[in-house]
Image (cartoon, rainbow, N blue to C red; front, side, top):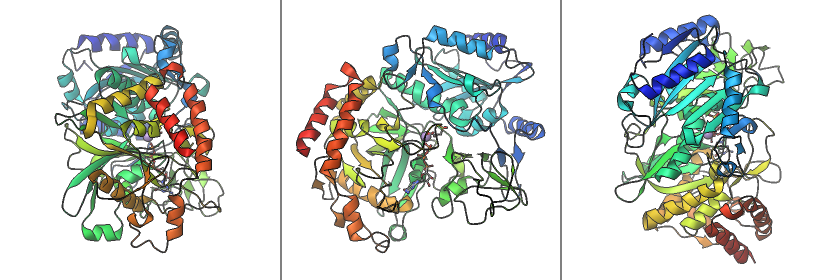
Length: 592
Ligand code: GTP
Ligand code: SPV
Ligand code: MN
């Protein structure tokens, strides 16, 4: 097929990569439905995807990855800046020249007998002032079809790129999916990403974590904007006013769920509505009015399947009813539908588990779906997608919310004392690890702004960038909060019902932004008075005492916490902004 662009920087790079990986054929992805349909057919013929029930799940497919390739691999993810210091103490670093050589040696000749797909894509709506362009080369049909859902893909991208050299190069080579030779490498100074020996999600959909967070966070620092691991949500009150918030929670800690929440009955009756703008990534810039504006650079949702059901997240479930690719969930052979833990109480008896083995969900002790199994669904499927979704100018942000999975210590919600104190609150985020990354699950680790695995440069400089953004925003800056939906009682039960009921907490947050709700000052920040959290309709589930308990700050636990923070901060040496050191001192003295 002939090239779709005459852009010299694109053509010469593709030529170079072709000579390296030696594909049998080059296929330019044009974004047309005909081309995608023929690729889907091919995927079904080769067995790479399984066509699901056309009546019940029109246009949906199931894909299984290798058993050793089911999550991001943080230990094999590298930031390859020229200076090690620029990757910083929280990233794995490799010298770029050494790394290119290593990766080229692995990828050399690996497309032989395969096709090279050229995917031109735009992160953020094409032509938006926020938008950035990438080109991903891949030998995986799964990547082509997922990227076509997750980003704006096709010929239009070449038109807006023109002759520009400002685009991100992405080479993905599946190779033999060898976990020992798996590497996900970002070269922020070269706008380049190379991913080898994986075929799973965040490792290979290069527009997502690799570009929209690791490369983009570095671009944002240099260009004065922010790329964050955040959902974006609009909340419409009964007067019809819509306020937008962003929220950063670590992987598998509730972003998709909060972004699509269904208001509790009492709120619905009053006329509250929710609009989803994004569920994973926010790009944020200073707007002409001096406020912070956010767009979602993605065009779809790559959501966690387990736990998604008609009660917990009916909107997410609705997203997956057509045009969706499921990865590593269970198959019901009787009617060619899919199933995962927590979907309903009717697992298939004639099923196939995520590994491809026969599986009877009624008798098996094995899981049917992998805990990090996912759905890739077009954003336009979402019943509550925001009318602003495709507007390139974004939405103005009233509040930024940080949060993690903490059984103890962190209260249900608190407000920071100022922007800099809010940056401190984000920087000390800690959360129990989940199945979204390979490694142990349930271990508490520091995950500043939920960006630990995604910051493309020195995290000390990243903190400084946050402080600087606050200076630019001045009194127009969003207010900063922290939430924790995951407090456990002595028996290990969640103390807060979560999901749709989280709107009760957002309600208080928005009232604080407007100055209409009261709060109690504590050493860590402002906490609601229990009577200011609306419990109407859940009085049986959450007693006054429980609410009081999850709003309590335990000075002893927080003193211990400050020791952990001091230890963590030491890593950054003189890269730690003095403003944050001062915030830590302030917290310590308020605790004493
Ligand atoms: P990534 O896509 O990995 O970035 O994850 P995410 O942050 O979008 O997480 P998601 O919304 O998919 O939720 C992950 C898990 O947390 C699911 O198993 C949910 O059921 C669970 N979860 C989400 N919100 C809540 C909540 O409010 N309370 C409780 N207890 N669990 C929740
Ligand atoms: C996450 O892990 O935060 C995800 C899934 O959103 S992945 O795309 O695999 O990074
Ligand atoms: Mn994520």
